[in-house]
Length: 60
Ligand SMILES: [Zn+2]
Image 1 (tube, rainbow, N blue to C red):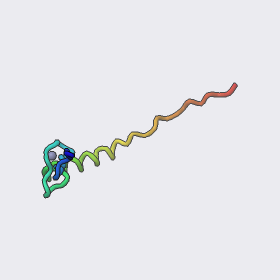
Image 2: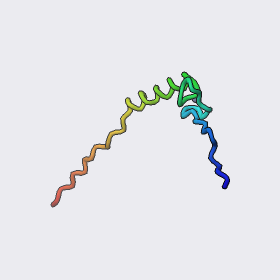
Image 3: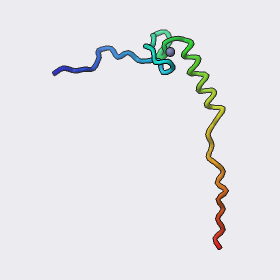
Image 4: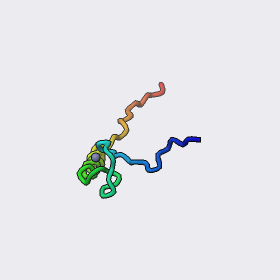
């Protein structure tokens, strides 16, 4: 049997894809952490709401 799973999985920075560091887990640097945080805040501003359903079909 040859388990191909690495003994120590290296988590990648979700922002730039570089190997993360323990100091800024799971990011590679504090900067990327800020970037990710900014993304969350930005996405919070633009909340995709459901389109207005003015499809009032009169049953005639
Ligand atoms: Zn990064």
